Every structure is written in structure tokens, then in C-alpha cells.
Length: 475
Image 1 (cartoon, rainbow, N blue to C red):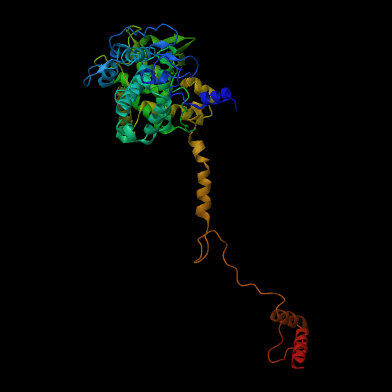
Image 2 (image 1 turned 45 degrees about the vertical axis):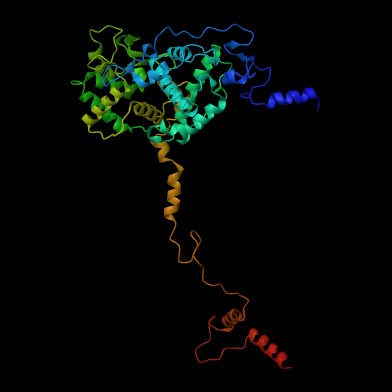
């Protein structure tokens, strides 16, 4: 192998997190780890790409992430806050300026700009929750390390601890429990978005989360769904509370009939309910930013009309008594009110449970998966099919046949292996002398059976053979 070939082998095999001479214009201690090496293109210097002037950091044009729409901090109960104030304070504490001494890019401007770039308030809240949790874990794992010093191995370790409830992540998970694969995939998706955004803005050379594999998510969702009877009962409960709690009733009806997400319901305005092509419809923005139109049946419109009459089109359709938005926690209160009014015993009724109910009932009724996908706003039909766990599928499950096989098996006799057939009586060799005697006796008997009592049996062929054998032994 030539020296040039050996050099190529070394260049391929050396991990990208290891600094190599000539790969960066600064020594390893000063280089940002996420941007070190030659991964995906040019090397990264202390404040930008090598050979290029330093790029200005992102500028979100806000003083605090709490000033971003949908991220108003909550400092005390019922103060109108939308997200935990501690999360806002944590992100606001990130460095706001580049540090020439450590050659680190500022963290706050990029994170704040990324949060603001979220298309909906729900997306921004999800992003804030994920990045705040990750920043807390990173501070416990590597005190003093910057957000842009994260490597692919760090992201993998973080997800592993979240998924096993171990390490520093155990203190961050609720009750120290391991997170489900779908929740892990959600965390990873948001981290990929953050570091991908930082790479695009050339804050780092590449995203350390880009090639991290998402965990396998089961084909059947775990969110419980109501059956048809309970769904009908809940809707009647909403009608029962409409006079006293009109916003609660409308919220329950929309969640039950349209299957929309809690964040989509919260952001609805009065102008989103309109007349189109002879139908009452509601337009709302999905989590990804697309706008869909869903027709409203009369059972829903009857509960919505009192909330739209005489109001401005840009007013929130659903509001609390003090003017605050109808967030997911307030929606859960509405669901419980309707359930109690209908006598429905559901201890953990949530908005997402009704979304699962809508999908499950439609798929069980034979509605094409493409139509259900369109209603729920899923980007892929695979996501919609995770809700296909209706009554018909459960009734035909193979476990019922297995239980039937096991319970119909007769009990085993003592000393007999389970499932083995019962012991047969000892079999006789038809060629044994006793059997031959019986057979020939039957043949020589006039009646075809044994000789009459008191009468000596007639000599048989077997007797002759036995006599000849005895004579040969005597001689």
C-alpha cells in the first residue's frame, strides 16, 4: 500500500470529532466540536467557515424568547402565561455574544431565531420544551460546555438516557420513567431541526443530529380511543353543558367530530368559521403550517353559533372567562365537564384521546385511509394507519384463536406430557403363541368360538409345532 493510499485510509477512518492537523485554522481546544473536521465540506474556523469573513449571528429582533408569539412565560397560576417561565429564563440565559476567548458562537440568537421560525404557536412551544430539556441535560452532563460543542455521540447518549430513564435524564423525565419510542422520535426531530437551522445559518459546520437514527415506532399507536358508544355519550354530554358552558361544549364537539389537535383548536379565530359552497366550514392551520378546510355538521354548528354572533373575525373563537386562550389544559377541563354531565367514567380523558377516537372509528367504519389522513392532516398515511386498531381488528386477533386452542385441550393424566395423547392399552403381537392358539381354536371350533365347557380342545397346528419342538429337545 502506497503512502498516498495509507493517507486516504487514515482520512476516512478517523472520526470527525477528532481534530486533525490542517482540518481547522484553530487548535482543537478552540474549535467548535460540532463544526470541526471536514464533514460535508469545508472546515469551520472560530467564527465562521475558513477563508470567509465571520457571518453575523441570527437576529430574532426580540429581547426575550418570551416575547415571541405563543411563548408568553407563565410565572404564577392564571397569569395568562403559555409556557413555563423557567424554560424561558433558561434559554434567555444562553450566551448572546460570540466569545473570542473560547471561540464559541453565541447560543441565544440562534435558538431564539429558530423558535420564532416555528410556523405555529404549538410548534414553537414544542421546540421550547425540547431545547430547554436538552440544555438542562447538557449542563448536568458537561458543565460549562456550549450548545454548539455537541457531537453526534452526545445526541445518541441523550436519547439513550431518555429512553432508558438512566443517567442525568432520569431526573428530567417525569417520575424518572423511560420515554416511549414515539416521544424519543419527537425529541430527535426537534433537535435535528435546531442543529440543521444552525448549520444552515453557518453557525456550525454541520448538524451533529443529522445522521442519528430515530427509534423504531410501533405500527399501532398507544393512545387509547373511545368506542362508538362512549363517543356518542360524550357528544351528548357536550350538548348538555352548552347553556352554562358554551365554549366548553363547542370545544368538545370540535375535538370529537373533526379530530383536530389541541394546538389547532386553541388558535382558531371567529373568522375561521364561514359559509362555503353551501356548507358551513372551518379553516384551520395544521401543525406543519398548511391550512385545511373541514365541513361542519349541524350538530357542531348548533354549539358554535353562540360563539360567533356579533364578534370580530380576528377574535379567538374559544376563550376563558378572563380572556386567556383555550389551551390544552383548559380543553381537558371541558372534556371532563362533558363526561361528568353524561355520566361517562373516563379518568384520563385528553384532547389527543379524541383525535385517536376519530381516526379509530372512521377506519373501523371502512372509511379509506386517505380520507382519514386528509381529515387529520397527516403527512404520511403510515401515521394514520397507526390508529387502525378498531373493534373488528381486535375481534379477529390471533390471540383469541390461541386461547381457544389452549382452553379446549383436555387435561393430562398424571405422568403424561401436556398435549400428548392418552396411553393406549398394551398391544399384543399377533404372531405370539397365545394369539395363534386363540386363532386356530376359533377356526377348529364348530361355532367359530371356544370349545364347549368340559370338552378338550382339538389339536391344533400350534400344538403340533410345540410337540415337535419338545421331542427335538428331548433327543
